[in-house]
Structure formats: structure tokens, C-alpha cells
Length: 469
Image (cartoon, rainbow, N blue to C red; front, side, top):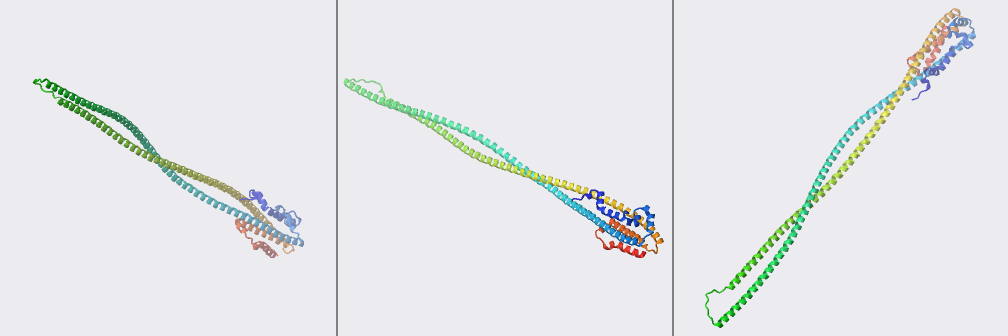
């Protein structure tokens, strides 16, 4: 909103605005020209009243016509002056009304901006609630992350325990394998012992057979010897009666044979029993070792399956944890971005509010300057009104004195037009004063010119002149 320099400097603006009027007024009330000095010196210098009265005392018919023409010129000039003053006052009033409307528009715009600022502050309060929701969600996600991390730690601890159990089972399996190897070695040793026992039994059987053959040979030899002895005895025909019992060699041999057979059978049976017991023990131990190994293998397989399942679960939990951390980071970045955008919006609105406040302050300063200009103009108008009232009082006094002198001197002479001119001049000044006062009291009255009112001073002047005539 821009104004001319005439609003910033009240005194110079009044000169610029009312300069033409002052010049016109100076032309109306000037005493420099010779014809006007003859009849209007009394309007500008109070000390020239006697001289003007003396000069009006001896007018001629030419002066009468000149005075009439001058009165019409003065009335025209006064009309022009009034018209210019009304136009200038109307322009000032229009500019003042425009400024008031502009101020109202700016106040309305300021109210709109304040409403927008309050709305944006409410919106700023709403994102704080949204921020609280985001923070609540972030806390929940963090709690889930902590829970998943705790579950992952538990799964990792369980995996470590399973690994330790698997290690123990591996050690146990290795121990069982070592025991199995030892049992197999012992079994091989026992088999060797059984083989040695079998070989010993076979050797003993061979010895028994050889002894049996030897017994049979000895029996045969004995029988032959006995037969030879009997034959020799028969040949010698010796009869000797001996009361001696015959040795029972067959029974002895049978007894020896039976003893050897019993011993061999006992040895064989004991060897077989020992071998069978050892073999059964080794078989049972091998079976137990096989069962232990099978159970260990099954446990190892089960532990491996559980370890694989735990590894899969740990990997899934790790992926879920990473996904939740990514979501948490995205939510934090998004919330930070929204907070940054809202902060920028708030800063922009605060800058706009400061700019608006600055503009309002500037407009208020301009409004204050205009009020100062208006006050200065009102003071000048009041001063001019006082000057006009003083001039009116002076002119009324002069016109009353002139009327008295003219009525006394020129009651029936040809110079009664001077009296009529003075009366019309005073009437015109009075009407101008009334119009000026009305325009000062209500500036809106100057917006619509009234030709009838402008022509009224001339009509009153004519009526006054005709009445005086």
C-alpha cells in the first residue's frame, strides 16, 4: 500500500492541496490591482477603512458597472474555489475511505491468518498425539525385539546345551566303541584260547588213542606171553598149584580207559562250557554294546534333528528381529521426517506470522501517520475556519459600516450598486462558510455536488441587489 509524499509531510501536503485555493483567495482578496484597490481594499487591511469609505463615496456609473462585473467574477471565482475545495476534500475523503477499507481488509486478513495459525497450532498438537502413537508403537516393537532377543538367547543357550549333550553322547559313543573294540579284542583272545583248548583236547584225544593202542598192544603182548607161558608149562607138565589170584589186566585197562575217557569228557565238557560261557558273555556284551551304540546313534540323530530345528528357529527369529529392527528404523525415520516437515511448516507459519505482524505494524504506523496528517489537516481546517469566521466578522462589520454610510450618503443616487455588491459579497462569504462548516462536520456531504446549492449564492445576491435597489 503506497501513498504519495503529500501524506508524509502534512504542511507541504496542505500547500500542495490548497495552494491553488490560497492563490485564488489571494486573487480574491488581493489589493495589488488598481480597480480592486478602489473598492476592495477594505477586505485585506483594517487600517484602510476610512480611505476605502472615502473612495466609495465618489463612485461613477463606470465604477458601478465595473463593480458589478467584479462581483460576478468574484462569485465565479468563489464558485471555482468552492468546487476545487470540495473536489479536494472529496479526494481526501475518498483516499481516507480507501485507506480505512484497506485497514479493514488487512485486519480481516490478520484475523484469517490468526485463525490459520491457531488451526496449525491445533494440527501441531495433533502430530504430537501422532508422535505419541508412534512412540507407543516403537516401544511395543522394541519390547517385541527384546522378547525375540530373549527367546533367541534362550534358543542359543538351549542349542549350546544340546551341543554339550551331543558332545557328551559323542564321547559316550566313542567310549562304547572303545569298549566294543576291547570286547572284540577280548573275544578274539578268547577265541584263540578256545582254539588252543580245542587243540589241547585234540592232542589229549590223540594221546588217549595212542594210550588205548598201547594198552591194546600190551594186552596182546601179554596175552601172547601168557599163551607162551601156558604152552611152556604144558610142555613141562609141571603142575604147580599156586594159590594166587590171576591179575585182572582187562579190568585195569578198562578202568584206566574209563578214567581217561571220563577225564577227557570232563575236560572237553569244561572247555566247551567255558567256551560257551565266554562266547555267551561276549555275545551279550556285544549285544549290549550294539544296543548302546544303536541308542547312542538314535540319540545323536535326535539331537541333530533338534539342533537343526533350533538352528532353523534361531535363523527365523534372527530374520524376524532384523525385519523388526528395519521396521523400527523406518518408523523412526518416517516419524523424524514428519516431525522435521511439521517443524519446517511451523517455522514457515511463524515467519509468515512475523511478516504479517510486521505488515500490520507498518500499516498501523501508516495509519497513525495518516491520522497525524488528518489531525494536522483538521487543525489547519480549524485554523482556516477561524480565519474565515474572523474575516466574516470583519466583513460583517465593514459591510454594516458601508451599508450605513451608503444608505446615508447614496440612498437615491446611482451608486447604490456598491452597497448591493457589498451585501452580496458578505452573503456569498456566509454561504461559503456554511458549506465549509458542513463539509468539515460531515465529509460525506462533499461527495455529491449540488448545483442548486452552488447557484444559491448568486440567486441570493440577485435578490439582495434587487431588494436594495
